[in-house]
Each structure stands twice: as structure tokens, then as C-alpha cells.
Image: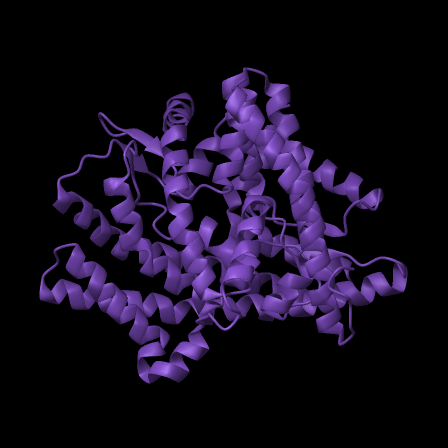
Length: 457
């Protein structure tokens, strides 16, 4: 058991860029790519992941400090400090049973592939940490380790099925064939999907703003670097910065918005040749099957809508944190609200107006869920010693993946009647979600292949 634990801990310690670079290289070799091309693709993926991390950290370091200064200027005391995802999942990996999730996820994936229940080969092993966190939270309230890992295994199943029924949607958005996304954040579609369908009926399809249309309408002010500069200056002014610091923050935000799409292009460079090799390989050996490579969400990171909305809603997020009764969380580590904005981008097909409406409505839920889980994360920190809570404060994770689903599952596992009722509602919504999203994906497939399909197929 200790050997297994040490092996998987070694993999974790490699970090996502190194680990996934190795994995993609090995996949390329398996699919009969030239070794040099496979290594090049793997290294490029590692560079892309490292690049995205660097730019996000750069943004958080600079914009985050200004946002924190803005909150401090108000004099409001919020007793739960938002860590963001790296410390939160880092603590989860420190849980004594965490190493078990690696073999569980691999076995679930292999069994589903063998039984033809999925076509997704999930190589996004870094997000095993999300299942570890689910297992810990359920175990914490139920005191049953087996239940925690059962729920986590079911989450892995749902992620793979979701990857299957959204693969053509992903290809439509990225232009990259043969990939899918089994990331947990996209399971939030179970609750988002009905809401988005209502918006589809109420809002004209012409109500949209994307980066290109913005550039066409307002010229230079629609360029990434100009938008970033103006937004950065605005946040600096709200933080009480002086003129020099305001301008510096403007340049820093402009740099981040300019670099995001540049770095994101590397994902296409890395994945396209491997995808083509995988397609050719499976056609030769499995005439009746198509496999996809399951990857992390940054393959969509080249679109400006994500980053523009994340930055624009930082003041809204901070305002909510200050005025919502019962909220205890000071957003800081999760200011770049990836786990709400990115699924909204995905399910609205990049409609900026609908993304903005969904974000404004969804932020309060995220703050209250973060408040609910603050004692859990504080306890996890005390158990693992991974993070030391500041004196008089709790630890929280604002913008946690599938916040609403985790709250429902954990509350239900604790025996709460409200949680159980919400779990039943979620099961019903999941049935209609998977049916509807699969139908939508067939339409995207037809569009990509240049054929026709009836909307109610």
C-alpha cells in the first residue's frame, strides 16, 4: 500500500505540465507517431499548460492585490479567506486516503471503454484531485470512506458520459477534432442547461458580443490590450491606488489579456497532430469505434470572452461579497472565476451577453456555498497541515468546481432532508440534461460534417 501511495504521490509532485507532457508523448507513440513528433507535441502541451498557469498567476498577483485593497478600504470584515484552487486541491491530496482515487479513476475509465459505455480516454489525470475532494467531503459528513469513494467514482462516470455528449460542441468551439473534456466543472451544465434554454427563448440570438464584433464596433477599444488596460486602470482606481500604480496595473492587465490567446494557440499546435494520429490508428484497428482524448479545459482558453468577463465581473464579485447577508468569504484566490465563466461560455457557445447574465446570477450561490464549506476546508487544513489558517479566520474556496452539485451531494450525505430533496431534483434535471445536450451535439456533428439533422433527432 505504501508503494502505491508513493508512486502516485510522485506523479502528483510532477505537476500538471510535466505529467501531461509525458502522457501526451506516450499517447503519440502508441498511436504510431514519429518519436520526435510525439515528444514535440508533448512538450508543446506542457509549455501551453505552464504558460496559462503563469499568466493566471500573474493576473491574480496584480489584480488580486488591488481587489483586496478595495475590500480593505471598505472596512468590512470577512472571516473566511478564499485560497483558490491550488491550496484547496493541494490539501485534498494530503488526505490519508487520497492516493486511492488514481487507480479508481483509471479502472472506471478502462471498464467503461471495454463495455463501450464511453469513447473518452481520459488523460487529464491532474483533475483526479477534484474527485479526491469530493470523496473527502462526503466522508467528512458521513464518516464512511466507502461512501466517499463511491460518490467520487460516480462523478468520474458522469464526467466521461458528459465528455461523450459534448465532444462536437467542443470541436465547434475550438476547431480541434478528436478531443473531449471530462473536466468536472462541465457537470454544472445539469443546473445551467435549463436556465440557458430559458435565456435562448427570451433573448434574441442577435444579442451577443464577442471580441471580434466588439473590435468591429468600437475599433481600437475592442483590442485585447486596450480593454485590459482600461479594466486594469479601473480596478486600480477602485483599490485606491495612486496614478502611477493605476497605470502600472493597467499595463499588467493588458499584458495578461494579450498573452492569453497567444498561449492558448499552443494547445492546438500540440493536440492536432496527436488527434490526427489517433484517428488514423483507430480507423485501422477499430473500424466501428471512435475514441477521443479527454483533456483539461484550457484547450478553449484562446477565446477572449472568458478573460474579458472574468475581469469585468471582479468588481461585481467584490460588491456581492460586501453586501450579501450571511456571506463570510473574502474572494481572493478565485477572483478569476473560471469554474462559472468557462461552463457558461461552453453551454452558451460563447454568447457574451448570456455569459454575463449567468455570472451575475451565479456568483451569490458560489459565495454561499464557499461559506458553507469553510469549516470543512479549515478542518482539512488542520488534518493535513497543508495550509495554516490565519488567526481568527477560516479557509474557503470561492469558485469551487461544481459548487452547487457538491453542496447538494454533501448535504444529502449528511442526512439533510433538504439535501436529499435537492439530490432528487438534480437526478431529474440530469436525465433531461443528458438527453438534451446529446441532441444538441448531434446538430453540431451534422454542421461539422456538412449534413443535415432534425433538431429533435
